[in-house]
Image 1 (cartoon, one colour):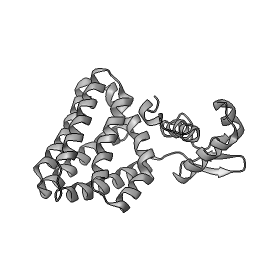
Image 2 (cartoon, helix red, strand yellow):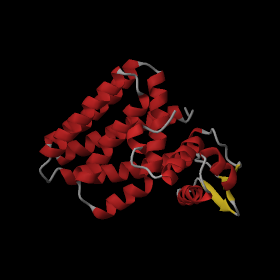
Image 3 (spheres, helix red, strand yellow):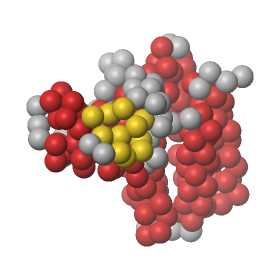
Length: 225
């Protein structure tokens, strides 16, 4: 499992290191309690310690590690923290989509249709990472369209973790077969049709339904009943 190439294309070396470490922590490849050494990471990536320090500072800000002298201790991402991340996503998107009912949505709808086409293409090519990236883009496009600076600032503070979790859950959805992946696409189409209606109550109902169903998928991925 890796970050999509499109995500890393414009990343600095420090950001690329952050992405790899973040995904390793979220997947459990790097376990809570493990110590991360600046020197060891720098050697692994063939770089100086400067971009490694940048990466560790970012991961510390996300609550995934605790900084110590010349390194860090991994805290990880607990099931409770993943659920809380999901709760914040729901609060953001329910607010944003209701707000969008009051503006011209046609440019947004056209953009979302194109993203759905890319999700279909990723399914045909069995590319789980690209599918996760387009899934992420679908939601980020909706949030950006609202034009709410404080909501956008809040989203920016969690977006990296959101994508990492999406990469994990999408890989598991793909493992369940094409029918399951197609159901995810239909869930996004369900959201798109709600936005197309322009009815604030209908939009809210569809957002609640989407996240209720997605929460079941999240629990499945976390190994919960």
